[in-house]
Amino acid sequence: MKKKKSNVDYSWIIKIVIMSFTISIIFTTISETIIPNVSTIMGIILTLLFIGIGIIFDMIGVAVTTANEKVFHSMASQKIKGAKTAVKMTKNASKVASFLNDVIGDICGIISGSTAAVISINLTKSLGANALLVTLMVMAVVSALTIGGKAIFKEIAIRFSDKILFRFAKIVSVFTER
Image (cartoon, rainbow, N blue to C red; front, side, top):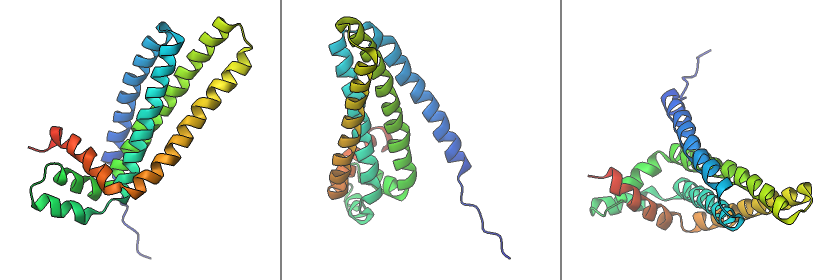
């Protein structure tokens, strides 16, 4: 019996773990130092920002996996800025999507959950309301916004994958293409 060659890219796994760890520390530091010291309204705005970032990166991750690579080859041959980056992203779609969806998106989900917990505590104190009820409501709203937003934007990502990827690739190309 012939043994199958493993296609596991261990260097990628190590890189993604290190990136996740680093980004998580940065985001958590921001949320843990800023959120407890801001007003409830500002905390809500920051929580919505983390939810939005998670949704946008999830959408881009889906767009990368559904985009048509051929479109970007044609653009790259015409030297259109960002097209080369888009080609690279489509060729590495699983890694790019993993980074965007799982690293950025999931970290934003975790941070929005922790900021929601701080908001719940602040609301409970300021309103003198039942802590369990306030926490349930805040967490339910955050979950609903995250899940609903991702569902809506996944559909958009599938429909407009080439446009979304190209716009993202143009931004990324500022840092990568020379």
